[in-house]
Length: 139
Image (cartoon, rainbow, N blue to C red; front, side, top):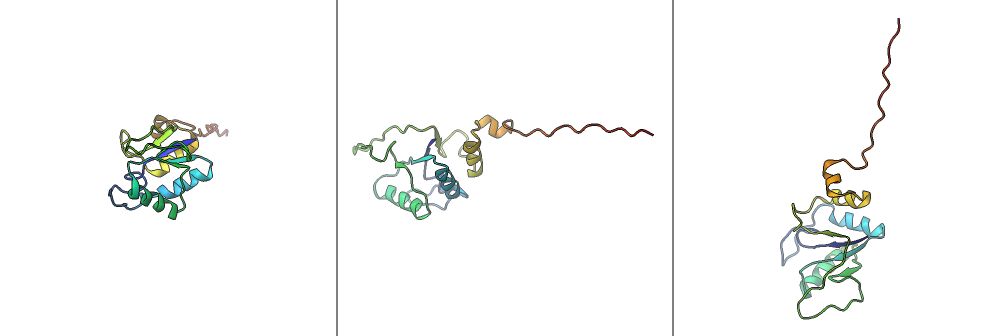
């Protein structure tokens, strides 16, 4: 699966142009997704040195993205300041309606292929316990 991930407010607390503290379990979750062969794209408004700082910050913690602000590593990006449209199956971004859920829920949603409704209502793939048979005592 191709997953586009924002940086500020999603992987780290929003302190732009500084780099905020890591949001709990962001790096751990991203590493697990990479290990499971998902292609992660860093998708951020950062440019130039600020972008490189974010990429280096992630790399120092063991997260290397498939691509940064583009669909493929070899893709040419316009230098005129515009952004290319990223093609991903999932976008993880703090600007989502309702914000970004915690990283445990994000991982569970991706790993179990759950929709938002299924995740939040708990209706998907619930294991129903078998009903206990009624036992009657006979005297």
